[in-house]
Amino acid sequence: MQQSAANTQREIQRRRTFAIISHPDAGKTTLTEKLLLYGGAIHQAGSVKARKAERHATSDWMEIEKQRGISVTSSVMQFEYDGFHINILDTPGHQDFSEDTYRTLVAADCAVMLIDAAKGVEAQTIKLFHVCRMRSIPIFTFVNKMDRAARDPFELMEEIEKVLGINACPVTWPIGTMGDFQGVYHRNSGQVEVFEGGRHGTVQAKARFVPFAGEEIESVLEESYREKLMEDIELLDVAGDNFDLEKVRAGQLTPMFFGSAMNNFGVESFLAAFLEYSVPPMPRPDVAGEDISPESPDFSGFIFKIQANMNPAHRDRIAFLRICSGKFTKGMTVKQAITGKDIKLAQPQAFMADARESVEEAWAGDIIGLFDPGIYALGDTLYTGKKVQYAGIPLFAPEHFARVSTLDSLKRKQFLKGVDQLATEGAVQTFRRADGIGEEVIVGVVGQLQFEVLQYRLKNEYGVEVRVTPLSFTAVRWVLQTPRELNRLRLPSTAMIAKDIRDRDVLLFESEWSISWALENNEGLRLGDTAERG
Ligand code: G4P
Image (cartoon, rainbow, N blue to C red; front, top):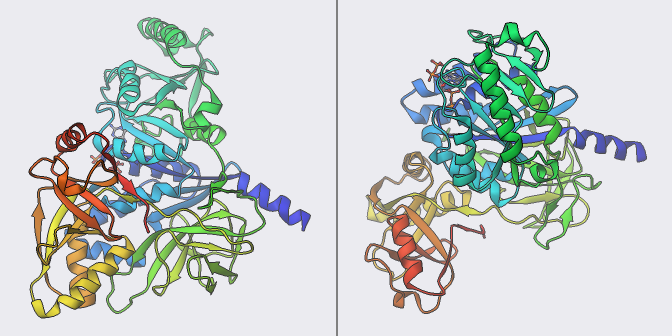
């Protein structure tokens, strides 16, 4: 028994579960691929990319979803590196950006923030960053595409601090940022990692390190670069934040690295530093506020994503479970917190880089895929031993809204049932006007593509054809506190008072400006941009 406790502890300590957050085109796919390459999970770069290209080449997104229903391997990638067991969670970007992207972050213990060196902090990165910030998880910054002309690195640091409100501490520092990239300086070892360029890196390449203090550097770096680097380092030492591991782990300081994923440059040293500074699974609070230790002998976990199989002949789904404590073994029986029912986990799946495999055992930090005949809901807790229930997964504020109505009024019942079911699953959020006017449902989504998903699924699973009419709202806010009845608030004429699926009061707005206006003109009004999922 003691031996197995020690084994569980060892397994958990070597786990790292993280997500990469970035704006489309910053290089997430390329970086993921290089990480997998170092981890030996793939032997030649190109396979992840190819899969992505395949996906993008298909204009019919239904096909994409169909493929994913069968092959969900890109949702989680798992590999071993240097004694660590790594789980990378995929955060869908591009046109399939959705609430799932946010929800995935709830399952991560750390995040890698990837920034395009020429573009800096972009819109989608900001949104994802804030979701990570809610949980104070450690965030590591990788500034990519240094092989091209980049923005001034001091300016990038400042932008991170100003726009995201987190201090940045460069661990490496770039040399040559105008498209004349020479490499990076490692501040704690005093070594220069030399960029030899042109290595497009389809296979793993060894980095070359030269001490900055020695003579050899003169044959590697021209004088002007050496001088500039010296100046930069002095400035950083004086003006920058000191590296503080405690702050990093508390999500208050982001270590910053520079490199080029495409050229395989700076990726391996980033991975090594990341593994050293990041955290294994940490205790998670349950609804009662008690912290559940990952090393608890009892198993527990929660469902953060449910992937519907788009094949109408199979109503089954895959529920993604993040294990939070203890050990999972195939065939074990767990309790579902919300219903108190026993469930035997008979066909769990783990996600390797290039195949979906049946999993025999897994530990806190791991993600397993459970066959779901329709019994799970988002945020469900499964456990053994003493009852545990984790806090629900928040509802994130949608940014696109539409009025959805059925084309055939005789099918109204099926329509409402279908919309309700999709909302429960978390595919969309629904609202209705507080004044009860209009029979239609207002649907809100985080990514536009979800409207097509809604239309397709209502037709295929419920036999209902719907009309989707876009509305000009761009934000919903949950009313946390109000000084008077909602219909007596001073609101911009374009705002709407509505109710969410759980009958909570919300306000729909057309712009950030309208939200500020409402707050300024109604003292005591408090609004939230997330709500607890009921
Ligand atoms: P994403 O998943 O974040 O959307 O980005 P992805 O990896 O697909 O990269 C977006 C583009 O940026 C790709 O170019 C990719 O090759 C390029 N890229 C990634 N890392 C680097 C880097 O370190 N330096 C430079 N210069 N480019 C980089 P593409 O033209 O869209 O695709 P491809 O034809 O190169 O495959």
